[in-house]
Image 1 (cartoon, rainbow, N blue to C red):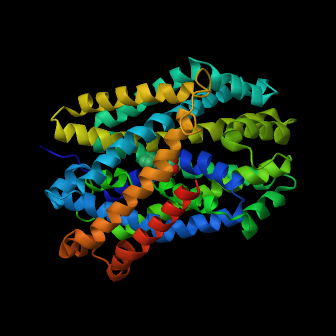
Image 2: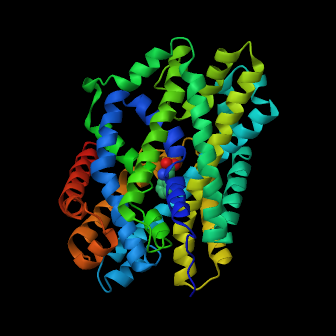
Length: 443
Ligand code: PHE
């Protein structure tokens, strides 16, 4: 079967960066950072990125490009008959789960983008009520979830070069531009310095086991690693793409965007005296309020700021949902010989079903819990704190210990190969293992 390819190196880098940069940076990172103590969390998170998540990213690139296959097929090519293929199946499962609940929040961003462009959002004053009414409504968030999944579906069905690459090339630079403008607005608000020191002055007394597990989960989530997303993308990289350089570039862009999101949100929050620890509603409840407080007497600026922000969220989410969708689509397309659009249809249908369940857990099914969590929280927990670290551990162990050493070295083709081998074989598996077991046991 003819396989897709990214047509250019820059297209490949931007697609991988597009996968990494998303709601994880702009919605999940500030939420986690706010509820885990600010600067100390950021430091641990950066350590997790460097020592644990980045090695997993490089390992995924190696597996993907060496096998030129989807995440399950890659183990069948590289280690036929061995149980590593389980890691591929866990990845496909993770991809379905993450896309299902992520699309719910992506749907919210779409609604907020429409509302802020039409001026509807600014007409309100009680943003908590607006948000709660919206997310608990049985149909409206579901409609937006459906629209979001449909758009994702269309891009993925269109294929690698015409769909994914073309989109990422336009969206990623636009995203970075909007972020710069927004930081400028935020740090020039009165009293912004309190928010800046929340982000820069660590208080280690706030660090608990749970903070460390959360920081690792965030590192994996934000870099899209551990469930084969980037292995799938790397299977479309051409031979000239430098894997280590690409990984460094993606990690740098992703971390910059996350920290920038912190610099957009916290200075503004502290400037108007809102609590940093306000949970998942942070960007949907507190921010409109912040826009309102900050620009109350300049409605045009308020309009521009909020419209830009929510459009930014939509774009960031889209380049990520595309990559989650691609894990399952590539697997089904190549394994069951369905055409790409048909394979994509299967993924969309499954994720829409589970997405609706997750969406309802903010309203009708609020009381339905498993292990004390709603379906939405359960999906987030299972993917970020369980499947992604576990997958990462397996991926690094495979590349470090079992994969053909010559093949690994020729794929890496870098002067950092010896260092990377130590990270794959020892540092990442042991580090992930310890945090994982410790964090789960302490529950
Ligand atoms: N990294 C994406 C983000 O930060 C989320 C993601 C997770 C994408 C897993 C693909 C796979 O929003």
